[in-house]
Length: 301
Image 1: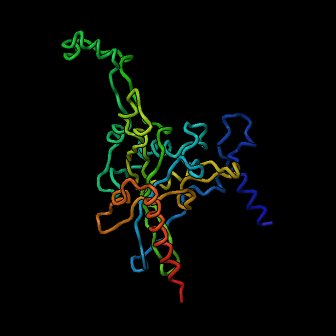
Image 2 (image 1 turned 90 degrees about the horizontal axis):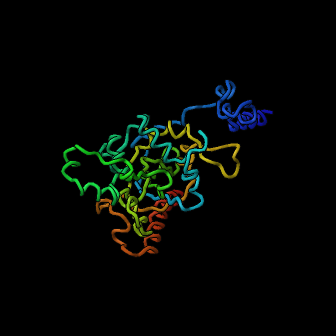
Image 3 (image 1 turned 180 degrees about the vertical axis):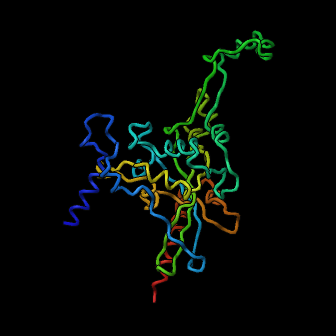
């Protein structure tokens, strides 16, 4: 009976008032019963003392959004409902709204960025050829401000969710000797996209689109509350969505290690295995196995 009530309460929460709504605008609005059953805060991380860490390794990984398992982080590219939004839109809305303030320009969280700094990376404004010809006819007037170029001759390009093709994450694998297990904790996440100035060009090649730039780095622990309230699509059961915080902490994604902390200034794998894609993948697997083998070796007698 207790199990039945547990499953019933979970399904009621997952429907988001879909079956009880009398009007379309009531869909997604939680009832008082749902609010009483819902836990609106993410599961807090437990305290880990430095003396409890027997082994740790910081690694950087790349989540390719072209892989099917990673689709919940990408689709839908447009906001369909409050329960169906891409991860990028969730992050950007929180950053612009000030809910997420710990935004940096690097994965070591040294250079803090403002909203203006971020928007400069996301937007490009250029003048069309017709506008350039118009300005050349009376350049002095336009430079002095006597004439203003009509907006129809300016082309604005903005990086939206559909331009995000990957995410970089940085985290720490550590062995907790108190609990006797290997654990992982995300430290930061960064959306990747082609340079906005490249996208603004008329003829953009696939090779140019493949060159990705990190837009910004978000310190992950500061974003957990926002990600906990945003749901990702559950392909196996749409009645029970999963929030982004659970998805990322449970590592329900596929990622490839791009570098590990090392004596060479944390150099990337591609820096010492240039133009060797297969060898880079093998090196990433070697790093993964090295971390995994440490836990396995703990239980050899």
